[in-house]
Image (cartoon, rainbow, N blue to C red; front, side):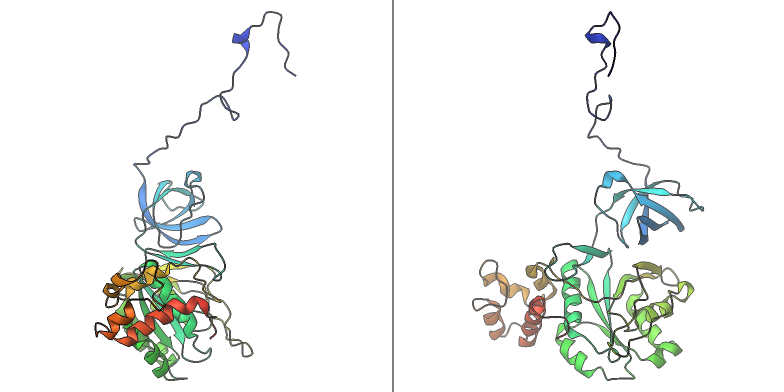
Length: 336
């Protein structure tokens, strides 16, 4: 209890304009005009490894960013100690506008959206032709996420020495997706790396795929100067691989001619966040035919104008089938 002297008046009483102190709060935030641009390479428990002017700098997110999180590939504004010396820590004060976003949810009923990679130009979907068996529905889901997020897809098929690629190529041929087929022998002698590298030069490419398909082995071969942990084995009983990449990591290609982003192996890929109306943007030959569609058309219903558009010869029926297969992938389980 506060005690006052004999001669007190209202001027003696300390006023508190707000509950945290006597300094009034302000909504004016610093502009950080001296901030330097950097690129997020990896995120680990609140610490972000960034590339700033050719130096590796450790940073943390500024409190003023709130719940907005930076992810691998983000272009960020950084202030503070940018020397990159041991035990120094900079601060990320702004996340620049993203050109593309790869997002996923845990499953189709999960409303919580997770941003995996930002600002990638291309999504390399890696799948083994055997050991483990291909999962076309998971590939479909990755394609939908790529089309929705503004990334161009690339299909990389590994272990062609164990099974031919014909069935998968037939399934995705109508989508006009670029592809590379590799074998384990070609991976060892460097031929596969050369062919994949031709698709990556000058671009930021995120690699994605379920465990055991050889994704990290391929990334290690592409970026030998910064190899990831040794690849895990495939479980002989379940056919599933052991995760060898636990967090996304951006790695520069030799000659500063592009970036490779290795992501953790997938068990599932939810599409709760995807607006089906955006997937049609990846089908420029079909998109004009949607002008006669009813409002909020799912493009897979009796009144869809695409049926007549294709019947009139404006597009290949196989392309419409491919579109509808992708749009319906949320209704199927990934193991189908």
